[in-house]
Length: 537
Image (cartoon, rainbow, N blue to C red; front, side, top):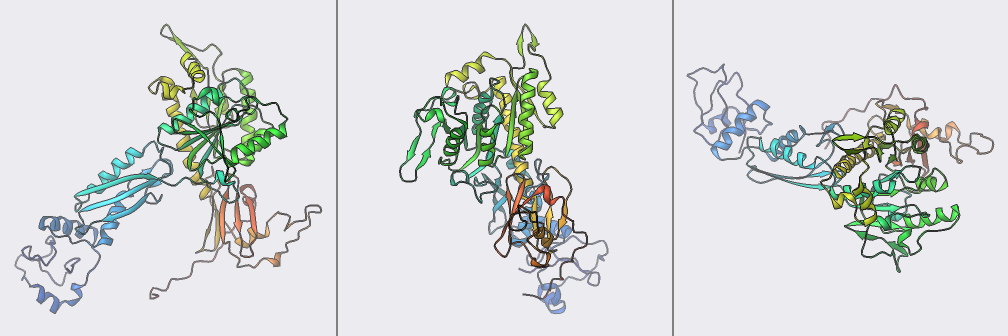
């Protein structure tokens, strides 16, 4: 079937609606009432250029689709229909990324049936725990169903496969984990393990695949707080890897499940045990691995941060001033390691009685952490007997009483963690990219609104590794002329939250920290992209 986009001014003919071979086009105001009607054959003979299929303008396409539905004959091309669907879906904005779901790459497997009246597609979100996935599904149904030619809409929801942002040199056991969350207090006895366990089971309740790693070798808490049927870790004899135990579908690893109880050993031995437990475990695909950090800011904590590419940290504190002092040390440690702290949980804040709320330890410690260090979210937990009891009974509070006030607080914390991790991963994955058109490296450091350009050769010449600079004398071994002016990177991959790894044509892998990239001379005048040959095949 052939299409007419519009009626030209020199051919004032209202096309008959009685002929199924033609589009139904509203009569323009400039047409005379007594205009002559032509058959299709006469049109093709006298005006052959009008018989070609052309893209419909937005106004004429509306009338065309409306009339085609009335006539029962599909007049849209598949490409036009796809564009209609994508344009409709682009109205839906992801609040975390600030852009539409089409640009985010969420729309997958778009399929339109032969009659162009049924649309099917899949929305692949960044995490199965997305707190607004139901809203996405509802809006997607609404905007596509609003298209005039659509009768049925089939939307399915899924999540991206679990994988680390940077999986280059990670141990095999960590390569299929999307987000690693450190729950830290840097002080004992503030309820850090309670927060870690309840956060993990909250994320699992939101639909995510979750694991918990109890990193406290001296006094592991996990065996007391959960009750797995199998309370001993097993080793896969073929791969020499550790098989985690499970409780309510959450994977668990703790030194307390190794049959050792509490350990008496020196720091270097503890670091080795933690390394082995974390990296040789068969975690499989996880959306979130929650690490219950041991108290302190010493060698063990630094080892954990170096082994695991932490996505974010949650800080746990109590109202006392002493707790704030220790927490401040922990926040500074994470800051130096480029691990963003996304939330503060102030435990044992208050209790309710006689219709009043009491704060026995004072107020303001958590708020002071938020204010002083710019951490965006603060959550208060009450002094509640059931919260303490659940930690001893082997069933987390959010599982034992999912409708309680405490469970609602952890639900809000879980939503916060999911949203912040999604933002961080997006920022890290797009922080440093190569623009092949202008042949420049684009840099937009996380938590910065500034974007700038760098010349690839300049970045390569500023390498500070031992291959380029003598470590003892500081002498520059890599000379200016050693790097071709037209060099281009072959691959750029994130390295945690602080740097990228750039692979060059000579096979050299350059580690470029964000801090260093911000000090390099920036590209202001860059070559314009070459004109594309429109006649090229």
